[in-house]
Length: 260
Image 1 (spheres, rainbow, N blue to C red):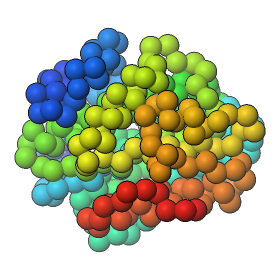
Image 2 (cartoon, rainbow, N blue to C red; image 1 turned 180 degrees about the vertical axis):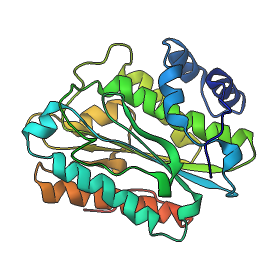
Image 3 (tube, rainbow, N blue to C red; image 1 turned 60 degrees about the horizontal axis):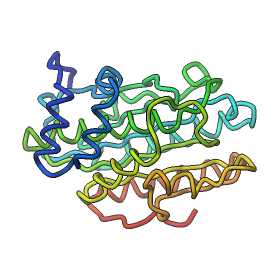
Image 4 (tube, rainbow, N blue to C red; image 1 turned 30 degrees about the vertical axis):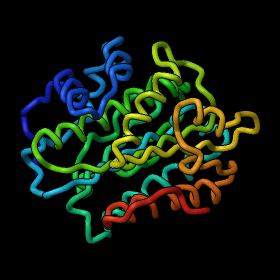
């Protein structure tokens, strides 16, 4: 695989998804309200033309890089968990069918969709949690990126399944355009297609009801992880997600996350 200079038309991808019945009118309107095309484009990565697999699995993670992760001493556990997921997928027999993408909660892209051989692990050098918590805005961008990439493959006759993980240790504080109800519309669209899993991990901050936060965003209870704030619990939660992603990669249907 290699990157191509072809640049997908984001608006056309969304319109095609709507025409195909994948994207509801409500979601299409929500995505059209703000100019997030450049941010979505930053995550699309490898061209469909450079992927030889007959079907693909898109594994997408959004680690929290807010300051509270560092203050709680959890940066190392998040790094380990993220890297463990990538390593497990890279060791699987299905690795050539998997593309991964990691975008931080505050919007910067660690790496766009790429083969696992080009995936970038988290390190002390590239993961410095010291920002805010624009949970709704960035979840909207993340899921729009997932949808756009899946539609890009669909438009080229390549079936795509997706597994996405959102990670936060706090409720939304800094979003400016997205609301949980809009995200819920998009999540519902993805889940209705039965080719997508949207999971969320809320690391205990002693205050936030993460199940309520994620429910309002449309994420189903069976895909919500609520580990405590210890490194061991965070790593186990990543392991649970990793097991589910591996099962999907092997062609299995996953109806819920296994118990940690």
